Amino acid sequence: MSQIRKSDEPMVTAVFDDERARKWVEQAEVREGLRTGQNRPAARASLARKWGVSFWTLTNWRRGRLKDLRGAIRDKIQAGIVHELESEITRLTDDLFLALQGGASPDSDAIVQAEIALRRACELLKGSVA
Image 1 (cartoon, rainbow, N blue to C red):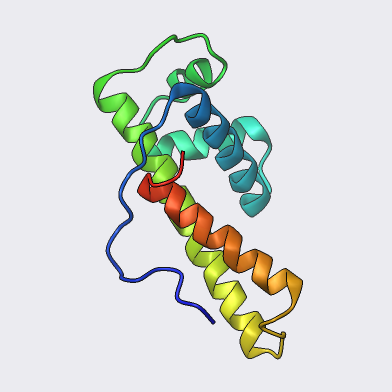
Image 2 (spheres, helix red, strand yellow):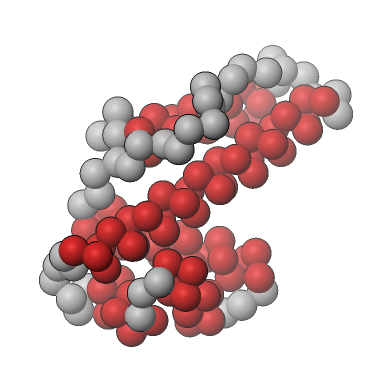
């Protein structure tokens, strides 16, 4: 299996525009809901607690009611998004490794596509992909 992450150092935070960050928060809500069995508002509340921001600030910003976030709140949301994505990349990398150990062919289309997607996700977080 190819090495997706070269080191155990945290990935560099990509520069997020508000639209992309809103989409990523929405996706984090979906993943949190699937992981915990919660509905969307409960998953959002869980993420808000984890990230150290107000549920209503996160809700209003994600819905576009707040035009711009500055300072510590934006930093907390960005750090939360990055942490969620890094955790997901780590989980998927482990799943890929286990699939290969379990006998999946390294040349199969699914494995190759998974490796490409993980590599692209890592590059995105590092900020090297627009």
